Length: 461
Image (cartoon, rainbow, N blue to C red):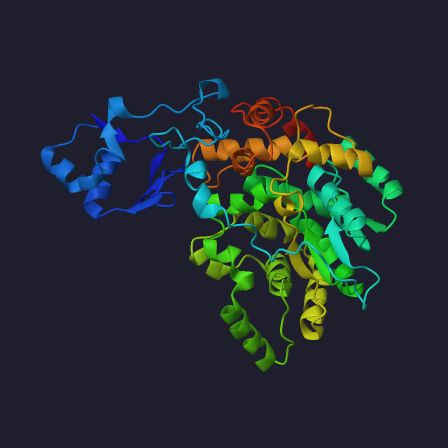
């Protein structure tokens, strides 16, 4: 009796893999089938003739196996197999493979990915602005990473910072307290808060939940709200507070190719792009400004078709773009700001601070929390081990929905938090022991619906 190996699924004329494969097959997750191969596979599970086995060729033994060789998928974290060097495991990432040394593909790829820092330009120091009363702006949630970024920019670099906070209905109490404490401790920071009307936000959330099974629209909707503010104030830099593990997670989720991490340094491509700008009577773009316009145009006008055709779609952003269309009025100020800034060249450059570098090699989560508690009055979550995504009461809902959709092969997107905590433990941002404790106690990797889902649904019902 033959069957399709676990985590492989027949979709149209392809066999598709839902998991993370060993090198050198890391992203070889789709196999084009002949018509005859497809007809044979459609019959499985069943006995196969010698002729049919010959037709399937090299698929037999890997994608098509004897029923007794079909891999079991863990149904709980206690049944999971863990990587020998990080906390990646085949429960939170079903379909995760291991090499002969017990290493997962994330750890197998450590050398090849060591220089993949960010898909936006990296800047760790900034000049004082002569055209604006602000040197930089940040999207501030009250969480660990954005608080550390605010501390670094305002207290270490002594910059004039504009901190932008989108007041989501699910903001955690510790985040609210952290924001209020930061206001009293960071004298060079100006704070602005905005909220979307309940009527508009409920429309967006209903649509987003129907597409993603969660309502997480951060930071995209915040960008929609605040980009006009950045343009009006002529802020030269918009600094993102993503920690290194988040940016590298895009690569392992096949959402950003290696080329995306070096685009900002590619002088030839940037020259050709700017030639087109000049010919259309627009000023050439400086480093980071292309990334700003690309991000804002995607939110205003929809997902990039060329990127999707190349196989690097981002379902999170696509679903958010589709959901924002439910309240199109909020996009009008953004579209006007895009047109005005593109004509004038007054575009805040989208850049990132390299947390690993400014921390002397590794962005240690434990030391970071100690620093921001002392310097910014940051308030930690009640969950003692929690360090990944600390500003939202329903963060677990995003993890849970992404996990369940991937587990049941309804989505090809690997749960973001699963990749991030694995990468962070590989990179020594936190100890393996603390990472295991956090994913068991504080993250949403459960096949059963978690209580936080009711908090999420109650808002937009």
